[in-house]
Image (cartoon, rainbow, N blue to C red; front, side, top):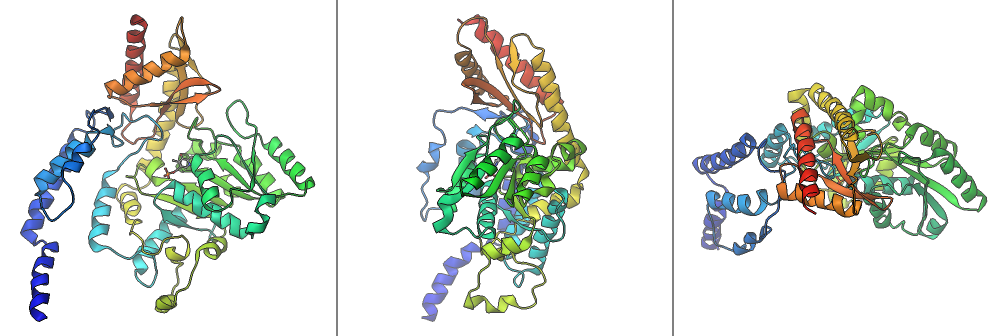
Length: 481
Ligand SMILES: *Cc1c(COP(=O)(O)O)cnc(C)c1O
């Protein structure tokens, strides 16, 4: 037996490369990422290719090894030069990504030390770091010491945790579901409705509230609907508003909705995945006034704090509801209950074993301070106004509404022919070009162009380039019949 163990050990020890080998591999990885960063301002924001990364399948997973150079080549050809480049400042579509550097280093450190971030007993420091960040973010939205929350992989999971917490806080049981009512708008992000469905609440009555001309919920309508539902013997329990809709960047009137929610004892959830961190700025604070009246908020550091993908946050005003909906006890974990002076993430979310993901937010905040994040968000708000002013006064263009945060919706009206078809061709030309990327949406049956400014690498020169490219493409299409 000993011989067998030794034989396996010899092979298994390949999993622990020695220092010189680590150094060699690390250097290649660093060279590759440095090369990427050195060129990031000239790399395309979007690349259309025919093979779409299929080359990955030519290198199946088995006992055959390749060296790091070959591995990097595969990644380069099949992943990093295909489709959207979210690290590019030219990414002005959907909700732009980011990828600030110190988060990458934090992920590297977290993966090597591999602290167990789910339970206080296992890593007091990792849990305290998460809870410290939760406190900082709770403070940004105006919650007090009673608040808690959880660092998730993104906004969708954060929405799910909030919906489940709301459901249990209102003690809604399966047999009551059909009689309960949720209020939201057509502009609510689809992850909210997905969360409602996953939470087993799809049979709730859903009231889609009318919106004003800027695509914001009309609070008076909310109150009328609630009164009607109450008099019909139904149970209103949840209202969902957006701090920045994905489609047009609209912020619902949070203050008024909050007042109504409190009066009728509804859980008030705010989806701030895109816009929540604008509360760091003075203008954003004014726009988001009333967010502190909510019972839960979600925000996405991988959107409006420019982090690489993989970090969302849910905040719950009263931590007991979050704990009540998610804690669990298992016999094999009895030792973990002693001396816990912080709540453990495992008791506040569906996850048990948890990535030490707090470090990817903590490290950049500590090394940069908050000021550059705030400035970048102020800059985005102004860039959106700048683009809006320019495009509004460019001949032939029509703008839907003034931006409330950093999304602008516009289209070109051709002298003749179908406007929808023309704007679709503009998008196709932009995607073929690839220097910048933006997306489209359909509003009231009209095909609209949609620019979202949120990358920390998007600056005045990027927006000027976008304007130049849009004008180029329109001129080109006007020449081609
Ligand atoms: C992006 C987004 C979500 C979903 O968040 P993910 O991080 O993509 O899971 C939810 N709501 C809004 C308003 C968003 O913009």
